[in-house]
Image 1 (cartoon, rainbow, N blue to C red):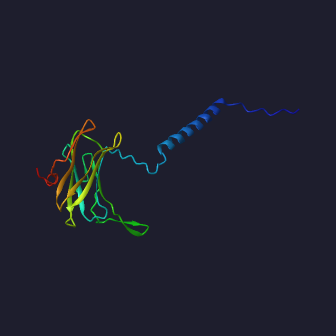
Image 2: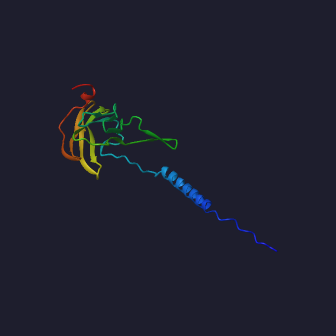
Image 3: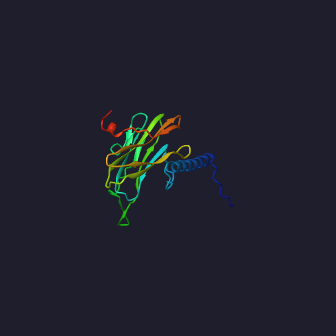
Length: 201
């Protein structure tokens, strides 16, 4: 007489362990994926509180330097590009080394611009000075200064022109005061900063 094959006993514990293993593997994969997010091209979080932009005419050979002092007495300039919470992001030297190599061909960069970023603010007065480091002509040079407060929204603190009249001249473009994250005062009273970077009083 034919006897049907007996089905193997159903093992509940094996099934539970298998499902747990599959679930663990899925969670491990998910955690690994979250640890390595896909890079977003072009997304830069600079966290800049104030941006200072100094420009002078394109292709002009003169070298203009920006000096910025914070309320704590820190001064950022070309020889000290980081001071306190301030950074000199770009030091432009006129036409000196202003060529770029693009597809094997030298291209002249006409832009004359220096930028300083403040990544944090402390209460007190900030001073923005311009120094006519190198003058190649006898003509006065018009330099534009723009100071923008970037957070919580972009607000122009100051926008104006300062005339420089010769090598070594230092002019205060603007002084602005921050109190409780707000600008309370702006003025253009002269204050020398170069002497402070040389150890003067």
